[in-house]
Length: 276
Image 1 (tube, one colour):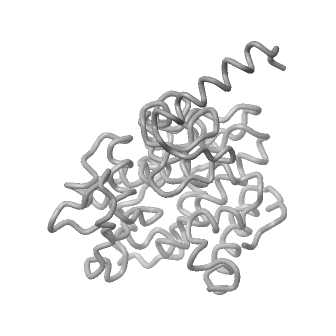
Image 2 (cartoon, helix red, strand yellow):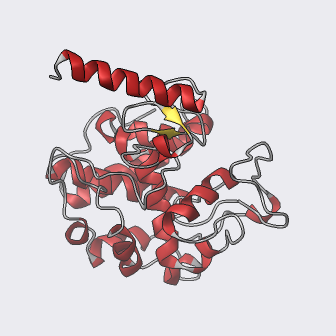
């Protein structure tokens, strides 16, 4: 526990950051879209929030800081050829994603996100891997789709977002394993990964490593931290506004079914709180 002088200094430092940014604090980091959760647990958009120690949101590092507290699972060992091919198996051979999504591309992408499936026990890590691929399999039809069905007819441009302005003629519809959507996701994802997400959103559909990196970027920024709450929390973090609280129980059931299936393959109990 910090002694009183240190506590006072930290408190004054936080107040200074908030005053400089002119933004309200959110100690629990339930930040609005486009805001970063700082290492101290406050919301903002400057480097003080999005730089070193940024916990979630459009962090400016290559990925959020790794979780601590446990070794978790060995991702490359757990996601074997057999497991990955099992995720793809239900998709017809005619699917565009059948050849696009490969285990090698996932493994390469995962090396940029050292916190994935880490921070807890080995069982916790395997559950996170199962949760990630359950949501991926649901979003893409078992890795069948690279692009959202009829996505080109939907622009998904938030014109009010000035930090990540839409580029005329570009569509920010769903692409990749978690169907990355909206300009306010393409922009920061591209910045973190190293491509121009606003001017070249199709990069996600052309480069399979980039595709998996966008999925892991979204996961680590928005989903990883809720894993201890159970699989249902991952659904809420990804598509809660459209599916949770009875809005679309069929979609929720599909995700849960896949999660249970993948947990069984990995030899772990799925845990509680499976629904949202």
